[in-house]
Image (cartoon, rainbow, N blue to C red; front, side):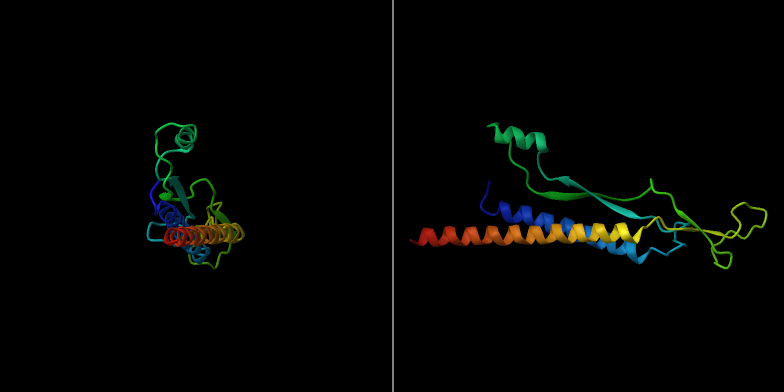
Length: 154
C-alpha cells in the first residue's frame, strides 16, 4: 500500500457519494414530472457502487497472507432507472396528461413518477452521513501523515 492510497480511497468514496446525492436531488426535483422526452412519467434513478480492486474474497485472502493487493476504494458502476417500482396512478381528469378516452377504464387517471420523497430523503441522509464519514477518514489520514513527518524530523 502506497503513501497516499488512504487519501485516494477516501476521495473515491467522496466522489461516489457526491454523485449519489446529485441523483437523489434529481429524483426529488422530478417527483411530479409526468412527461419526459422518452415518453411517460419520470422514472426514479438509482446509483450502484462497486469496489475498485479485489472483492471481499480477495481482501480476505490478502489478510490471510496471499499476495493479492488490497481494495482501492469504490466507484459508481451504474446509474439505472428503477423498473421494479410501479408508477403511481392518480385520478385527476383535468390534468393535461390524464387519459382522455371516456371508453378506457383508465379514464381520468394520470401516471405519476415512482419517486417516494420520504424514501429519497432517507437515502439523502444516508449519503450525506457517508460523505461526512469519508471526510473524517480523510482528515484522520492527513493527521497521521503529519505526525509521521514530525517523527521523521526528529
